[in-house]
Image 1: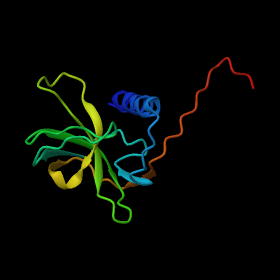
Image 2: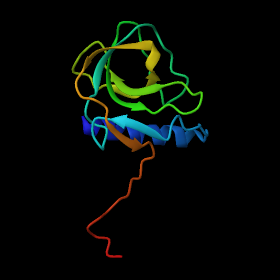
Image 3: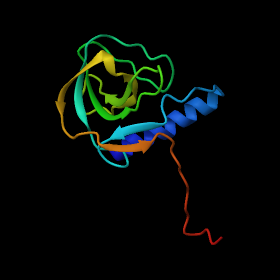
Image 4: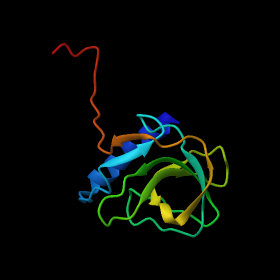
Length: 133
């Protein structure tokens, strides 16, 4: 599951950076079940369809199940968004991960409480055993 999340972050960065489009940050903090935000918080069901406005978001169909991994901490008048994954017709397909409005879903089952508050910025550094300085 952690591998899916890392691939999502890499893909999101490549897509958004490749297009040269600046997008406002949705929030500066998020709530997760763990420090890396890889464990599932809950299972939710979409109450209506949602069409993603940009590459950070996911398309959701009414009745579709969504695995929730983090909940953005709402700032000012911004809407509340959660990060999660949806799966295609086959359950063995890799899930698509992204944000969606929390008011469009209803939590069906809570697996873990989202008690860890972490920043939304991702610091990725590369280390190679061949780097000596």
